[in-house]
Image (cartoon, rainbow, N blue to C red; front, side, top):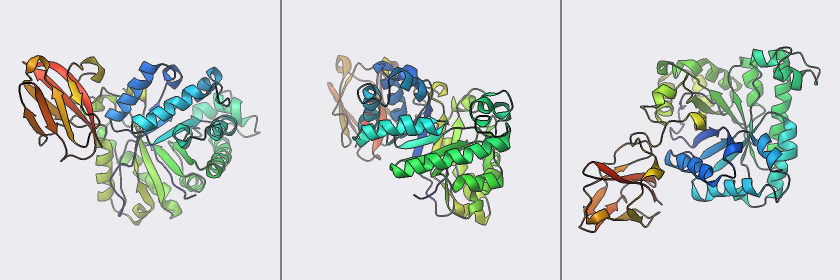
Length: 386
């Protein structure tokens, strides 16, 4: 399996010959144990993901899900299988990842779940390792990683001992993933050159965090770590993680699009110099986390579910939609893309009883149609061009 590194950082970059297209547009889903099984909560999550063009969900709290719904049992795990299938089949999610911190959980729970579900639409596609070996407060004596993992393995309770444990962990998970046709990835914050090389040799992709509170730091914050990841002289796939938390990028995202950090990071990366760049492949971005994300879509400032009085059909379509006008008259129709930008060149034809919208000249994807009458919002509806 080709080795990649997804770097979760608040950044976007591209090496010479790299595409600037964000192939991975991911989001961590925190509190998933409180979402799963609640149809309204599930659909709210999936509507949000689709309206913001996310195609990858990394699920937290699966150990709690497993405690409530034995994931190694085909019957009791149906609730999770149904969610994953719904996400992939109806909400444009192409990958679903399981987040875990120890090999036993991946091997004895997640992989067993995958083996029992033969439908690929119900399977996990990614095994995501989250073990913060660099976090001194967690690995020091008396703290969680020390007590739970390092001491039982007769390792020192420091970052050196934690990285020794980590190298074994990522090798085990990567081997398990290879044997079962799954992508292995890790999330990482801080590391040195030697650790970067070791990680790159043992994983498919690395998610590298770029948790910044000042947007001007977007590229400088990750530049040296990218160079360390390139030191293998083998192409490493890196995916930056941006944090929507209030103490990081949350305030900035309130008035800016979710895709802009990646685009700006790519631009800065392309403008940087150095032969090392040829060994970094930027392939998208990741966000932490669902509960901190801004309203969707940017620019509409209204929840999609709140107003849906007009009838719009067919949906999905190949480009043309018909709206049945409320009260026989529609004053204004506006069209937005998923980041809240107005689509000026969509064709709109209105009569007394219907409005026809033709978006066949637009790229395939998701759009929003906002209908107002005397400045009152009548309807905001999601439309899909296939």
